[in-house]
Amino acid sequence: MTLTLSINDAQRLPLAPLAAPTRLLLGPGPSNAHPDVLAAMSQTPVGHLDPAFLQLMDEIQAQLRYVWQTENQLTIAVSGTGTAAMEATLANTVEPGDVVLVGVAGYFGNRLVDMAGRYGADVRSITKSWGQVFSLEELRTALETHRPAILALVHAETSTGARQPLEGVGDLCREFDCLLLLDTVTSLGGVPIFLDEWKVDLAYSCSQKGLGCSPGASPFTMGPRAITKMQQRKTKVANWYLDMNLLGKYWGSDRVYHHTAPINLYYGLREALRLIGEEGLANCWQRHQKNVEYLWQSLEEIGLTPHVEREFRLPTLTTVRIPEGVDGKAIARQLLNEHNIEVGGGLGELAGKVWRVGLMGYNSRPESVDRLVAALKQVLPQ
Image: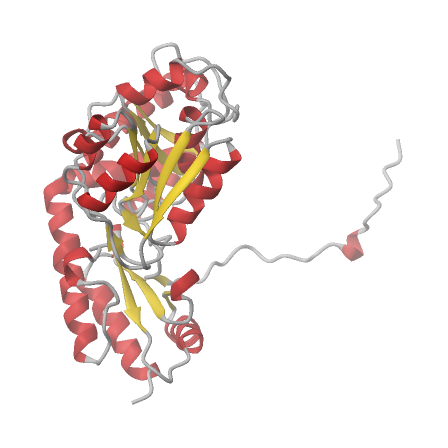
């Protein structure tokens, strides 16, 4: 048998062995993973139904309940990025015609609006300027006006660096008989979260920020009220891959095959969660707060100002105002090319106005701050 190549050897791209650059990732994510997490990810994979892997799945579930402070049984890691876990919350609970109310104060509130609409929701939104948060009174007025089936809020808005207060919101949602859906992508692992105490019904996150792992294994949790709504659907969940009726059987006692899980990513997530447990969750939160306060002080000493009011700033991500007359993109390029430090630019309303500086997971250390500030002193105009 003769094999004829349509693209011959002379046309193939000659590749050297991979040699990825070593960066300090101080943008909005991903963050650098702990060396122990990288070592765990390099271990030999097993099968996705191997008893050892099924035990690892149980360990991941237990530790996710710990970091989220919830007893939700349906707590898993979705095989996909945080956006997949975000979509899973809506896909499983939204039916055509459901009123979904979204608090929009940044880029990811707008993403929730777009996603909910694609599942047939009657989407309503309340808005604030980027960097601000919603008061309990504003949320009460919106719930009275719109009477939604679901209220979706972003706890940690990655585009602005603002933290949405949650005390009392769950009680409001119970009063108005709606589910509370929460984005914790940039808060899980680095910001105090009390899902059960706050009466949150649905939440999602990612693995590459506060948890300090690689992207691709994303936390998802669903409380009893949300499960009841899913079970009472008149229509099938419109997304097969993210259908929790199916995924729950893989992660639950049935262990029914659903898909081939990304084994090594789950190795890394399990190790990242182990490290948080070893440090202690409260200690982890305190470390993030202590280091971000050091960052704020150090930035102010060189004339840079955070965008968000101190009361509502995130300890994981800070938006820093770009001084007048400074080319923010050029400075970010210099940091990357000359100092191997990545920071993020602004999105939407804040495009060209701020840098986004993340201190998340393993990167939340004083030496990260020192290295960034030293580089900024070199690249910023006097």
